[in-house]
Length: 354
Length: 285
View 1 (cartoon, each protein chain N blue to C red):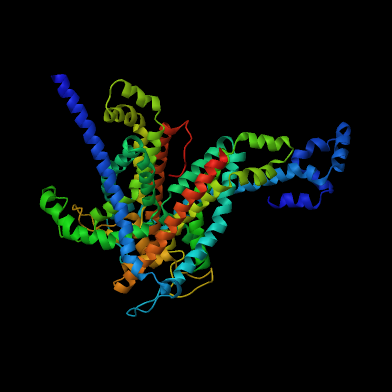
View 2 (view 1 turned 45 degrees about the horizontal axis):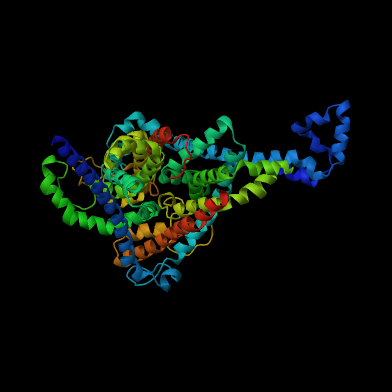
């Protein structure tokens, strides 16, 4: 398609220019014949307008369609490459907890468990912090501080995953091993969630790092959602004599509820797919332990650790299937979140990338 | 009396929640400060001339640097930009200038879906598309993976910026008899240029630090490589392997690499935010 406009330019006088469907009108017989002949005498670029426009449009369309093609390719490749594992294990893959490359037994349960638990820990820690930052920045904080604080939380989003991992490995893990985990064992040990030796690495540490990583996402989308709550709602609440917090609770948070939930789910989507930082601190042990201090493994980290070295096709296919499951889960979560944010921000100009 | 009590309670609740929000914000900010402080503290000592000019020394020898990783990262990013930026801008132009109806919604939706795909999954797909065909890891495969990640960001940024250009500008151009392709290329795109550059640079900064999609595409390399068809070193990959290694010397290098990488990315983001974004908003409205 891209070659079409060039041909039109290089051969301005050629009759071929009129083969184009859009020019059919002019090529029909008798009365219009005079029109065609005047068109023939017009300067070349004028006649090629239609064709260049069509060519340009086609190239842009091609770029747009390639976005569709890429997602289709992702789905096709994942399905194809995971077919072997699907035929070998079927649905058993998602209920079995055996992960034994030596005997060729694969089950994804420990990874699904690890992904879910680490993401949930992250959400529990990140949600109050993120919403607090968003509310503070949009509603409470003195004007000159708003931009710097907003900018600082966005900076957190710009830091690459591997840097979080590095920081967590050398700063957070020792801190957790020596102070935080023993403290949890002493005071929260009764719950059974904080048993076992304090390795430092494990679900709890991974969840903490994930929490820091998803705070900027949740808080920036929450800020966006809060900022589209109509100003007169706030004024109405204040006019009724509400204190600032009452105004925020009644007029702002209640109006933005669906959007905030959407922001949280979007954060969850990010946490589920996060790879490198988690891989560095979760301990990489495919077990299902009740204790949050125990090392675990996530879907993304098992791919990161084992895929490049997987020696046989079944092993690789099993990892592909883990990838496929991860893909489907994150897509569903993201679409859900997008819809919820959209119900609040629709009608107002939105930013697509947070 | 009860009303005064109620009044007091409401006031205190208000104070309490204001304090809570401020306190939690301080925690978040202090996490950010802690990360940057440790990066500078641990990394600054190892960032020296050797870091930028040497490659990895054998274990046990002091010194060495990440020169090959820096060059490798640049190569991968150039490959990725060459593929990702034109496609992203093209798709954005389509959405803003031509797209209507169902296809427009579909493309926009798909771009958002692609934006949410975990980077490790994109790495697997790039492996399956490029590495399997080539039969070995390569810089090109890493470029493909990062290009896929750049496209949705660039596309949506371009669309948004083009939609900011007033409709009257287009009408004026059409009124002068300028064809649509010419209007878009010579009038609309230059008007939105600053915004599009911003989007591209943000996408660039985002993928520059990505490790997961490079694990089994670019793969990493201890030595110099300038051929795009061979496995190549990249800074994020080197930071990752160095951090997981048991050697103190390599840990030092990892911190230095992290500091340089973050400085690069944060520098780009900040530059974009304060220089381009301001100009764009001023220019488009």
